[in-house]
Length: 415
Image: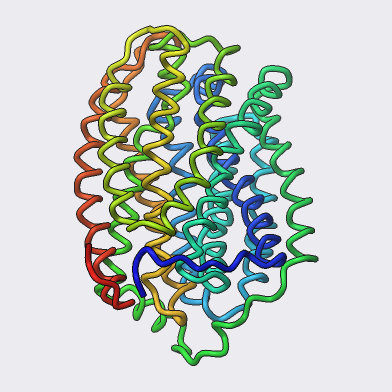
């Protein structure tokens, strides 16, 4: 099969329904995590947090999500994927609701850890469902639509969340997310059919043995490392977005929702296009071009001083182009690496490493970035840009190796 050969069949109505519901679950999970960044400046000021304390609040979710993924990896291929999704999604709802009730830093940290224990596994279950129901040549489009949850969270979720936070306090967005998630959970329960094809194939009976089998696979470890490196770059920079915009670039609190909205609109436009392109062209080639683009934009952006708002918006759009033009093909490649019987365990471990790597990156970022007081500019933010470039270069090498492994597996000539 040629790399650029595309399946001409349209998605069935049921496949469209699955994509929509999984995209909505991703929307709530992504929004729950992403809203921490725009609320960062408000949280640090209202709770008198240091950059390091805020980094732990962000990483608490990520690290607990990673641990949860490892614990469930051995069991991920032994149950109906729909039931797993429903179980972890209801736990995510409870955790998010608790975030909306917190009044102190210890309570916030505990609530974020609880949310991470459940929310961090949802992405890997969704990816396993996609890999079960869609052919590789369709997954670029599917990933493009599913990743739209990120853009939608910026277009709708984050601006609305910031408005609610300004009106009723920073806890309000979490209560909104929990309410939306309850409705989505009910639709998943009613509309999605059981996903049990993987149960028809014989695999390891012992969960620990199944987990070890997945971890010990050399080819899988290349995929794990590639995902971890991609995650480190994003998590290291992301938590400080609103604080850098407000304290360094002099964006006002009223302008912040507009800034995120413009970035989100660009994401919604970019991701479906990248998804289609990923199904037509070589996925690694797209990834490589996007990575180089992103590294250039990151270096310039992290060195910005106060400039007009439209300039900041342009850089945000350029950064979104780079981020998603590499994320969509990378995730499509990742889903093709594991065998059917290992898919759930692979996705759980992959998600775990992604979360843990991101949590560690947030902590390291909190140690690099310094803020003397609540209203001072962030210092050493430019250092993060250089660190991200170095990590991205190594990540490109690992994705290249992963791409070659998949081409060999599918008998596709190397480009």
